[in-house]
Length: 414
Image 1 (spheres, one colour):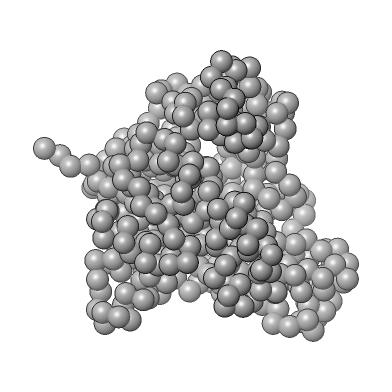
Image 2 (tube, rainbow, N blue to C red; image 1 turned 45 degrees about the horizontal axis):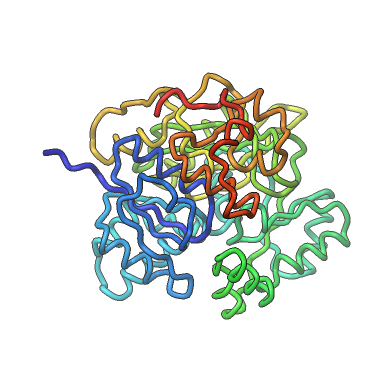
């Protein structure tokens, strides 16, 4: 009897994309476990074998307990903080035991060698490494104090971009057009989280990720990066021991807000993006799912690598044919079997991410003109999402789903 390989998804926030990734991994052949917050969207799916609680005030213990109970063949972080927790857990295990442990070995197997971990967390170091590899990048520099901000804007010009390490979802990115804006943005990005913000997230979003940074008075490192006028794009790869196995390259067509996550994307082929991702995966020896963000320069069409996201991103579940099925590629890497690509979910190039684009604009033309990525095969997840959006737990939307969404987005497989 063949035993299916097991993947443990680790997540610290309520991102909907984790649930979609769990569904795709189960379709690819994995048994899927997850460590997450209560009432996470992932709990509304039927694909999870075992759930483990994430405790924001004891995050490393949460992950270690889940690992010891699950005994997975692969760990996949679904957000930036989860990725950092796994790296910290690796260091803690090694410091305590003075030798590799099953957990520390699994972290390296799933993400890449420990020597790459610090580089994944420091934007300026990662960009310097990319430059060594001949990857096209914007100038990037750590801004240690307010005087550095002034010297940076004088040298790089305005507009310019300020980015804080350890942030996600666009929270730590500011495009500034005046020196006054730059100074204010630096002060905001360099400040430790406010208690009111940390408590608000904990009470109303069940997100306690800011409580520990607030208690420790952590001040993020802020980087300056030259502004590239053009279009945003993103790449997500499935990789193994430094080799890219499958990749999705997408251009951003619509965002929730100016610095927020994409809600509509278009599949593209871009040589700059492909080569950059392959070079960085090889240089760092990466495994698992790794995301890369780019700016496609308007005047030249060149793609500039602007940062890495060492975790699954919101497109990881999309299966778009040979070479573009990341869950199938990971399954093949873990089992040693050939890649068995799933049927394409759509032949359309434009993809509206559910529920993000629907939340942004329920009347968006992208919902009908593109592929609307609705999880029809998981009605409980779909209904829960709609109920939360309308804030009416008593409302039963089963008879109204066809009114809310275009059936043209239904997947071709169950």
